Image 1: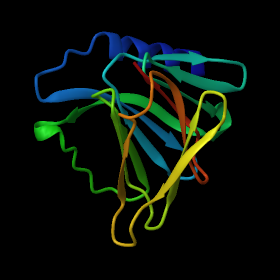
Image 2: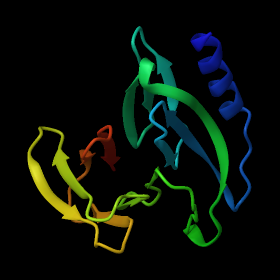
Image 3: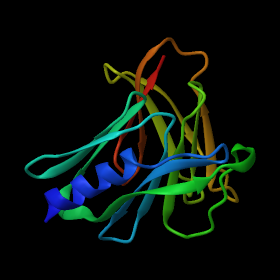
Image 4: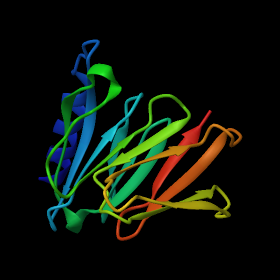
Length: 162
């Protein structure tokens, strides 16, 4: 059943055509109700392993335990003005389309976001303001390479800066 689900996800993404104002986002809904949307500049590949789902694109990769996933699919997201509005609660949205800025929306107030390089060296931590659920991380000063973004109680996101 899960292999069929993953096949349908990959097929639906491969057949999707994007308009100038729409992109396809990868939606992962976990059993605890957490919903994460990934807005990517490239097409990710979802691979089902024995106990996990691994999603890899040219700019990022993330893995989830199969037992934690309630739903995983691709959906069209309107990006007029590159500002994606979303009002659902308990939703994290990662946007990385300019090879410089990673925008994380849907954070709880005071959430801490840490950045590490590929070797695991800590590069810094930022926290959201008490009245803000969005954080922009600027990777512009960093050399090309892979970076990991961690948020407490969330999967680690790997970003590739070219």
